Length: 115
Image 1 (spheres, helix red, strand yellow):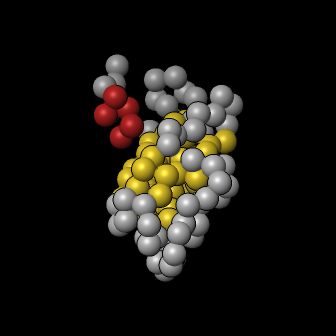
Image 2: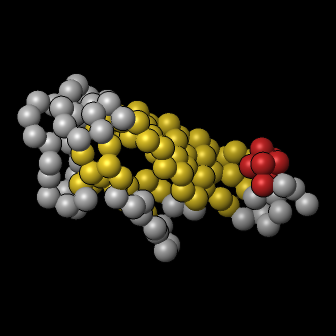
């Protein structure tokens, strides 16, 4: 049996993706209608790796999204994912300049929206 930490290290990584989206600071009010796409001043860094679970032999996708609020105001956002039984993040409050990480498994990043 592998411990959880060893299992992740033992996974044969088939593919890895890192996407960084950055933008300059936005001016003015950045509050939006819940469900609409968050503005570009919310930086998103998406990290995804797909591999084989050594205990069960199934394909596993592990991911993390880093959000940084470079907007001129505080913001409330959530992360939407794709996949069977996809579960989205809860609503996250980000102060000006605040950075937050959200982890997920067996799903894919879709987008970041106001909440």
